Structures are given as C-alpha cells and as structure tokens.
Amino acid sequence: MTNRASALVVDARGMRCPWPALRLARAMRDSAEVQLIADDPQAGREVTALAAEHGWTVEVEAAADDAQRWRVRRR
Image (cartoon, rainbow, N blue to C red):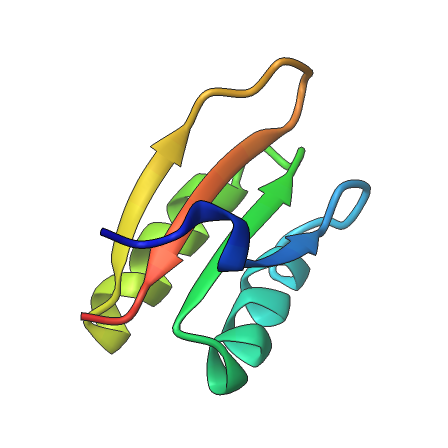
C-alpha cells in the first residue's frame, strides 16, 4: 500500500491546459507518485491522455473545493 503522504503535490490551480499536464509530466520525472490539483475543466482529459501514453495509473480523488484532484502513479 502506498503512503498517501509521500506523494509529491503539484498545485496547478489557475493554470489552463496544457499547463497542468505539463507540470504533471515534469513532476513524474522525479517522483513515482504525484497528486495533481487543477481547476481547468479540460485537465481531466489531458491527465488521462498523458497517463495512458506513459502507462501510469490515475485515481480521481474527492475534492472539497472547486478544484479537481488526481493521484497519478507509475505502474
């Protein structure tokens, strides 16, 4: 089981696509697990496509605010 506290957090709120996906890709270079926070409605589509391209797993997390959250891991 993965320790949720160990994930690198990338806060991309206020950024429009493709920036949240680009920030995620950059973070995944150095980390096996990243939590991405973004508020662009297109970010989910971009994150899913990027993860599929690289073979990463994506888990949508519940958010208490208007931002969306994803936990992305290497397989």
